[in-house]
Image (tube, rainbow, N blue to C red; front, side, top):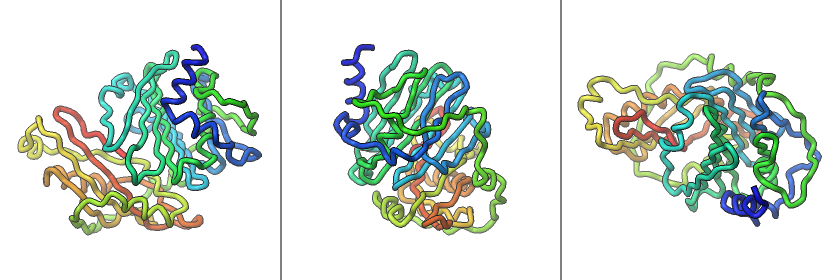
Length: 316
């Protein structure tokens, strides 16, 4: 690929001037580069990342969560025969701009928030054959130094996805995917017994900025590890036309003890569908949010979508 083509791709992805204007974050700090065993993909993460290295539903092989200086970074690796069809089935959320393109053997779908209440939010879905690398990053301003170090660390088949104007030799330790272990917090979350108690459910008009207000006091958001889909029974399937599209937005409380708290319904298109979504939300597995290293209550917006003749898609 010619250099001019590479520069065009960078511009389309993240805004050329914003990325190159940033200095690398904590250049003396050693990050950990996680590399697939076939060396097809690798990227670096700051210290104290939370790792789920177990095989999960829908082909998940690895998930990494990192938080530093208000920047939230995630990677999920999935292997499944259904991966090549993901680009066709993905439904962009409201106020999201998406672009798809190819780099060598990789097909990439990039999405960025266009909403005024989200200061910085980007996703990259990198697909090759039956494997998808799902990269997510969000921040308060978009100018945090961790953003450039994280994004510039992405390598595809040993070559950087983004070309830096000046290459920097930042301290890193490389480890293989097969060698990383699941973090204790993740093990505890999946082993935790869900309490059978009545959860208070209320209904109110939709609010678009409550999530940002909640985040301001947190040093780490709640980490959602497993978000079950609604379970449709025969009565629901028979009573609901398949040609319709149903959605529900829930404000879910994630308690410091790892249990689900009160749920507020912000919007709904079908009462029966929303009831099933509430039941599914009560089974979410997560690691509690933190304030200065201590578990804390928090809330997040959870959206569910049911389209005709397909399983529901959960969007951020």
